[in-house]
Structure formats: structure tokens, C-alpha cells
Amino acid sequence: MPLIDSHCHLDLYPNFVEILERCEEKQVYTLAVTTTPRAWPRNLELTADKQYVNAALGLHPQLVNETWQDELNIWEKYLSQAKYVGEVGIDAGMNFSHTLPVQQKVFRRILELCAEEGNKILSVHSINSARLVLDLIEEVLPLDKNKVILHWFTGTTTEAKRAVELGCHFSVNHKMLETQKGKALLDLLPFNKLLTETDGPFIQQNGKPTEPSGVIETIRLLASIKRTSPNSISQIIFENFMKLSIENNNS
Ligand code: MN
Image (cartoon, rainbow, N blue to C red):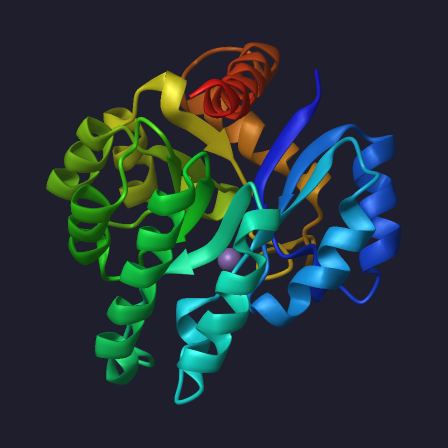
């Protein structure tokens, strides 16, 4: 059963090209998210002939600064080439709250442009900002024509329920599932909205950055929490990912 890594920063590994090949060999469907639209042309070029890896057009909320208008213009220029969008969203954590007003402006514009084109699948960051993120999605982006994957969701129970009602998907990683909060969150999520991610290279496994095939660790944890076999979890996650991509093509 092919594995799914729906949020990995492949272009931030020193051996990007080598890891791309390994995703193909090991049959790991990977969403290669980016942090700046300037990285898009190379990501698109390197993934164009790949069966298992798709590039996503990103503008990371932690990188939103004075030059946001330039970045957004470049992002907009490439949008028609991208089926997948990410990493985008809002970060209201301590270190980034000073850019919060601009982040909201940028994220709103990104959602508006996705809504205009339609058929996008977004991987969304929502640290300390789940309410803001969900407010904007609800207001701007129709989720019958687009799909949102909330990556590494850390919102409250109420926010998680609201996200489920809106029809969001959730990509979980092993770091989340090692915490009580992460496990509690899992109880609220419908199985058919669940995906797996690594968020590599920012997550380590055995002292080095995890690679997409490292989602097997998340699969094992999910299986143990849900008291079922890793195989049945893999099967569900794989079907969710396929359904997400196909439904989007048809809408
Ligand atoms: Mn990330």
C-alpha cells in the first residue's frame, strides 16, 4: 500500500533530488510544499515527470514581511500552474504576531485567488490562529470546489469540530500523536478526513530529519491508538488521499 505524506518541505533537504527519487522508489505519495513562490519553478520542473510527488505553491506565513506584496504578486503569477497550494495560512505564535495584520491580508488574498480559479487543494498552517483561519476559509473559499488540509492542527476542541463541519481534512504527524492533546484531537476527527504528514525536515526521527517514508511511524501510532492494524490505517489514508484528488478533479 503506497504511503501518503501530505506535507513535506522536500526542497529544504540538502539532497532534494535524491529524496524525490526515493519517494518514487518507495511509492510514497508526497505533497512537496514550498515556503516562497520563488521556489516554484524549480519544484515544478523537478516534480513534473514524477508519479508520486506533486509540488505545492506556497507563501509561508512565517516569511511574510515588508516585501509581502512582491511575494504575493509572484505567487499569483504561478497560481494557474498549481493544483496544490501550500504552505499558506496564518501564524499567530509569539515570534510572528507582529506581522499578523499583513499575514491576514495575504492569506485572504490567497484564498480569494484560489476561489476564483477553483479546484485547488491547500495545505494550511494555523498556529495559534485556528479561529482566524477558519473564519477566512468560511467567508472566502467554497469547500465544495476546493479542499483544505489543516496541517499539524493544534486548535481547541471547539475549533476542531468547526473545521470538521466546514469539511476540512487534517494531516497528522507522529509528533502530534505523541502528545495528549494530539491524541484527544484525533478522537474528534472523522476517519475519512484523516491524512498523514511528516513536515520534514522540521521533524526529526532517530536524530536526523525524517523523510516522507517516515510517515510509517505515524501509521503505527494511529494503528495503536485506534486499536487496529497498520495495514488498515494505510488503506484508509491512501483512499482518503486518492478521493481528495479525484473529487477535486471532478468538481
Ligand atoms: Mn511546514
